[in-house]
Image (cartoon, rainbow, N blue to C red):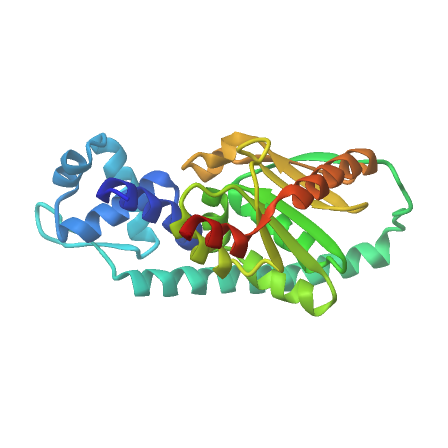
Amino acid sequence: MSAQGMVEKLAIELQETLNLDELESTIYLGLLRTGPITASALAKDLNIDRATIYRIVEKLVDRNIILTTITSPRFCTAIEPKKALKIALEKKESEIKKIKKSGEAIVDKINSEIITNQGTNIPTFRIIQRRAIVYSDIAQMIENCTDTLFIATTLEDISKMYHSTIPEKIKTCEKIGGKVMLLVEIDDMKMISFIKRFNATETRVCKLPSKGRIVVHKDKQMIMSDSSQTSFNSETDFSLSTNARDMISKIDNLCRLLWKSAKPLEMTSHTKTH
């Protein structure tokens, strides 16, 4: 992989891990590379509009990910990645505690004041926007699965999922009797070890019908997206989520057909090396 390709891959991973957008992660990595530098010089180095640089630098300063001097001109510097991760974790933990506290109070109020009718079997459809939300929904599907769930997606998508809670939820799923079956298309055999780290219950390799993402739990729920999910920008990741049984059944059957014709990951490795 080229140096530019490596930087782009790191930028994508930073977006998911530190909750940064594409430009924010690019600027953070740029500062790590250059060391202390003025915003104007950084804009020139990264070929980004100066007004945009100033706006994003101020935003990251407020989040304590970038520090600036009190000199004139001001110099910017990025905090160490380990500290940035700690800040992101503390923020996320604080948000979770707040949601849990307020959420429990709201649920209690709803249960005591409103008579709810949950007895509907009407199929629902919704569009999920932003990769973090899509992955959160997938993680919930996996966590509640007690039988078999299929994931058919690209190497790029797996590399992003690896930095979410999904691998951990696979372990939870298996503890309650569920299985997560991964279907993936591989061009680079060097990625096999990385795929194994994803910890799917079983993985098979085949030619996928599209560059999109399929996650299906028979009779329960399905999440699908087209090739737009390969974009570097997590904001452009749109997925369809539905509990419509007819649609789910057809996609589940497709995954099972692909599974039968696919090769186990270990067999693929052996075939390519001999």
